[in-house]
Image 1 (tube, rainbow, N blue to C red):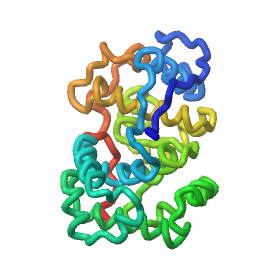
Image 2: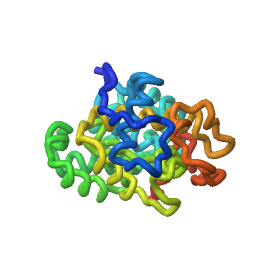
Image 3: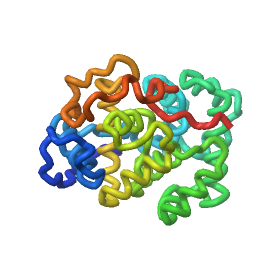
Image 4: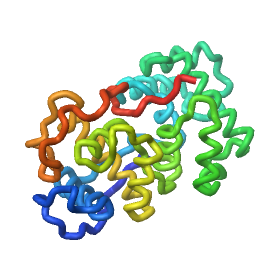
Length: 263
């Protein structure tokens, strides 16, 4: 079954006019307003594109530091070889697995990361994703972060998109958009930004899923690292006056992911 959101959920906005400078509005008011504005302008994103929760997890690992189109090629290779199962990945020769995911870049490291995850799944949860998904969110997040090659963004992608836990996923697009709208500083880290969303939105996995996908859309199409198209962006009316030129970091990945350590 494809993992999609059939219709966009909504977070009730507080009726703040778009012309009000964000400095006059708290994140508690502004973040729901952003969501409602983007939902009205762009509609449901239907993300994450996958046929099974395990495929979501594979994609979350492979998308580190690369564009999604490269991940799609790697997943197609794995599907062709009938290797989109934990057992198939764990028992496959490392060289073969690396060749199949070559298009995703850093393919030898990513093959090791995939094997590390499925070994963790077998050792800690008897190979059962359902059992893993039933683990309390905070505990599961901590255990995922202890797995070789899984950093905060990958762990949160697994929690949100595969397991439907209410954890907000942060990437470079997210930080750039918030920075340009004056909601975070340049030194804001992953956890600070994640807590900003989770502290000002209801703990709803469908909302977090859709919101993150909407922000990725904005980052790719309008809020670019170079030559942003603010006057065409749905969030353009919320911009602070005289924003600092190019205030956000360049993408280390065409997908907009904040880079995770190549462990």
